[in-house]
Image 1: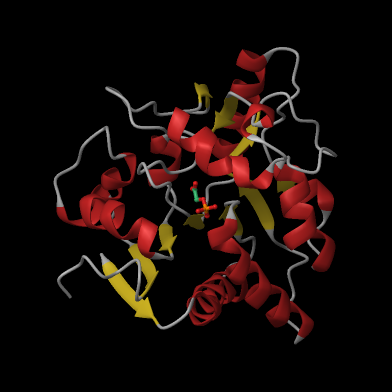
Image 2 (image 1 turned 180 degrees about the horizontal axis):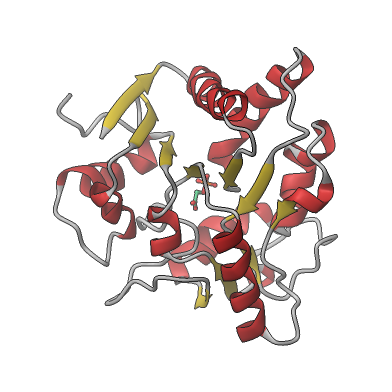
Length: 241
Ligand code: PGA
């Protein structure tokens, strides 16, 4: 794994956006695997700046990792709304080229199959990932087994607690989500894993330095041949670099 440590999340975001830019300019039909959460905001800010400086994204397709079950796309805490706010409304990616799971599908099993088909049709060139304090990637939560394809997941108590900061209170956080599975993530040609802040330092050490464990889902990234880990000094502080 290629590990890069930056002084601030903002510097790290500029670096990550420059990697995305390279993919966008070098491929005829680039497919970006996107993530939500506080960590990726500086990446999208830097990417939006690149677009404002002339980067063409009209030929880009995007696939997001996950969505809460029960939140409509126009719900302010949905991941659809997050993507619109931080990226889609600010750049010219055609709306029909942006894909997220539908959290209000009446048949969730069919929705998982639909999303798997979208992923098969649009092989991901580069996948951006944050990491949960419990080691989740997307919403692949610590478990005895990791699931390969898109699936419905019960969110862990830790995730509900962490994500409560985006809602009025913990009660409002959905208990379930649809997430891309680990095989789909590993099939991306290139992966960027980002983590910022002291609270991610221990899980970053476990994910990168210990063995591969299903109770630290991000550790499975050790199997991938092209992962760039982008950290700030706080999240890197337990690594021996
Ligand atoms: P965060 O979430 O970026 O808001 O810390 C990351 C994640 O849970 O994957």
